[in-house]
Length: 190
Image (cartoon, rainbow, N blue to C red; front, side):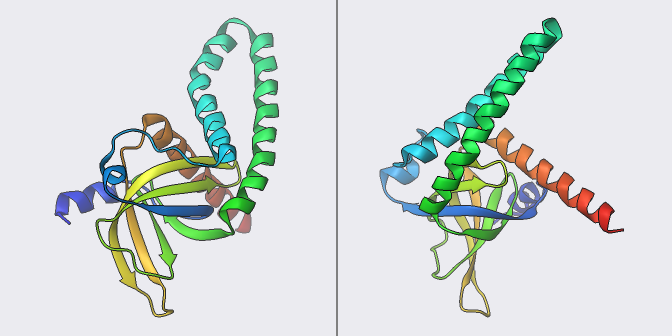
């Protein structure tokens, strides 16, 4: 890895988080394809689409609130109802994906422990559910390191590839919210 790549990775703030994570190895044409990934789970796709639509509609809601506060307040209530439905869907989805696990995350990539090694340069389809807002993201990543740990597992480091702007913004917002929560909790403990 070049010094420039290392510098670019360091420009992102990294957090420790607990998420639902499932990944599959991409091979051949899947690994190099430029089109968006699609998951076989209709529930996951629905959850992802709900969050992307929420992100894409935020600027419209700001414009509406400048002109009509009553309508904007009503739309915020509708949005909250949709969020609650999304959280209910996420509870079912978490049963599909499996237990929550500890990861190290930034806008640039994800680090996690895995029981088996994964070859450097392997391309992955990573299905993530970020908590507590139950944000579902399906992204491409490439393995940039795989190091054995003392406990017999492997520390896997990945770098996200070809994320859409909406996905990157949603991930950045999640990281900022997690940072703010950690700061608030640290202040409360003082």
